[in-house]
Length: 405
Image: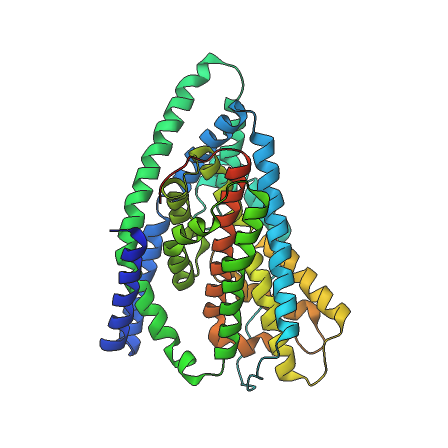
């Protein structure tokens, strides 16, 4: 059975469980939350060692073929362009469509946790490199350590061959483990879907936030169904963009209902290799970088959310230069969310409101009931960027094998 069918069946069973079984009590919700958390923990379990050993071999093989610099430039270029594109899409769509106002509610002010850039750099380069392997959410320190070891292995020295053989074997081992985990996740998605349904069915039933969600859904269809395929065909010879879209169905399901980029990454890497034929050297190099830095979906979502909040609180129009400032701030915030694989979208919205000021410091509370849903859409956009972006990198570096889907 195809993996996306397994995930669809899991979603259907999770929805049925949420609607039929008595999970709407405090005890039932707590139980579902616990099971969903365990599923997410299992899904992330082998990710750090996979990134570490896979990153070592990816750098070595890319360098050995003389395409390390080219792969790096294509990866970083696609990340920047996609983030700008998503920021522009959010900018245009919210200016073109005026969503209904959201009724003002009374919510307690939540303390804003600022993003400390200096702290992020300290995490990337701890005093001991082995500390980088201990972090389960922020994967960049682990990946940077792998890149450094991979670069060291590029030196011509016969004594390094056992290191490469061990890293290659462990990379293959953890890829196989990750494959098994993604199969198990098709069952675990039942709990994730059930918890998602129980948590938000009342919010959806009220209809207050439905226009916002419809706009985000339409933007995603335009992006994944039209814009990204056109760009892929324009920059890649003999590209098959809708093959990428078809291969990404299971990733989209996981991304939307978990809103967790780290949970989605193993599935992306597996589908990239098995369905799209992306070789392991690009698979182990570009996917992690996209997952950590390509968060343009967050930029799009918080721009739209901020303008919806503004229009609900004020009858004044936002000046064009203010919109440009908001968009640029959202664009730059999207690059510093690597240590927040889930929940980063609402944190970024809080920071944007605080930075803008002018009475908007606490207005983010208006969207607090749908904080996780807007995070789901942001993760959905970012997953599409990761899948199409890595495919574009592989096509242009000729590190792709022709597979029948």
